[in-house]
Every structure is written in structure tokens, then in C-alpha cells.
Image (cartoon, rainbow, N blue to C red; front, side):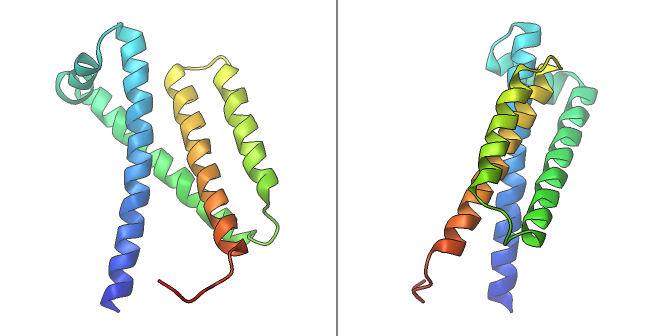
Length: 136
């Protein structure tokens, strides 16, 4: 029981961390482009200077995590019907979103999030196709 609980906690932490990194990278790129500043100054603007920017970053991270969990649930529901075509569609959508005129933070965030979801689908497809050897 404890081993399973530790495995689930590690899996959830990995998902938290991946979505946090995506939100952080998107926010840093957006702040650096908006203020025309270095990465150090952008980090200061994010964590020190303005509480609203920090809260906006946390909300963006929460939204990323929710979208990622919803995508996992949808994959689990339609597991047998999803193929590599879904990955191609996500990749094309991330390229299209990159060129649609919208706030750059959302462009970067959605592109990176689609790529993360695509990598998870590829991993699940690989696990599903790989024969079980019984080795750990």
C-alpha cells in the first residue's frame, strides 16, 4: 500500500512540475519580450515586484494542470481509439496557435502544453504497444 501511494505521489509531483515549468517558461518569455529585459529582471518582476503578476502566474499554472489532467482523463476514456494521428493533430494545432494573433503568453503556454500532452500520448502508445516482459 505504501509503495503504491509513493508511486502515485511521485507521478502527481511529476505532473505538477511539468506544468509549472511550462507556465514558468511561457511567463518568462512573455515578460522578457514585454519589458525588453533580461531573465533575472523578469524573474524579479514575477516574484518580487508585483503580487498580481505572481498570482497570474499561479493561475496560469493551475489552468495548465487542469487542462493536462482533463487530457489524461480523455485519453483514458478513449484509449483504444487514440493513435499517432492525435499527436500529429496536437503538433499541427500548436503550430497554428503560434501564428494566431493573441497574447504571446497564451501562445507559448498553449504550444508547450500541447507538446507535453503529445509526449504523454506517445509514451502511452509506446507502453501499450510494448510487450510486457515482467522485468522492473
